[in-house]
Amino acid sequence: MALSRRANRNVSASIWPGFVDAMTALLLVLMFVLTIFMVVQFVLRETISGQESELDALSAQVRELADALGLERDRNAEMAGELGVLNANIASAEVAAQRQAQLIATLNAQIASKDAALADADTKLTAFEAQVAALIAARDEAIATGETLTAQLS
Image (cartoon, rainbow, N blue to C red; front, side, top):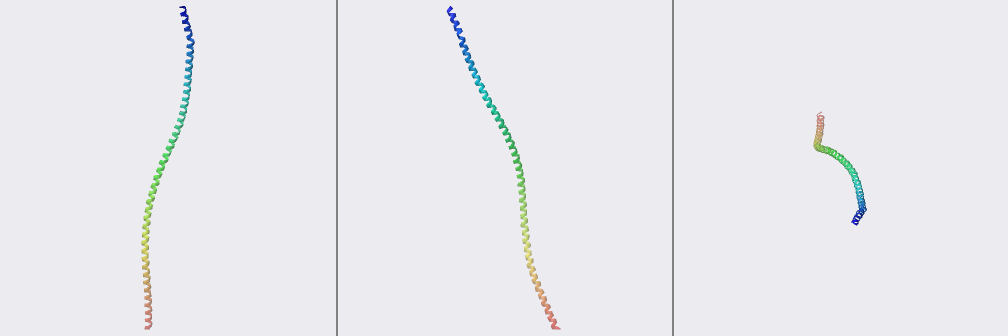
């Protein structure tokens, strides 16, 4: 019995160094896992903060592009209004040009009519001048005949 107690004590005394070694190894593994976890967490935090800064920069760029788009839309609307005004001006100018062309055609027709009337009047005037010249010649001849007859009678 004395042997069995001693053997029992040796067994229980020899367990503690193995237990301490196992706990130390477990603690080292736990520290290694925690270190790996912290490194991974640090890398992920840096990645996320980098992504957040990139996201902020992209958001600012999107806002700038939206502002530029708004300005371009305003400018486009303004130019569309100006285009409408210019198209209206062109249409009114075309109508005025058509009226002027009709007026020119009417005036040209009147000029042609007046030229024809002038040519006709010129022809009549020439005929009247010839008739007057013939009448003057006839009168002069009649006066000369009258003078000749008066001279013969006297």
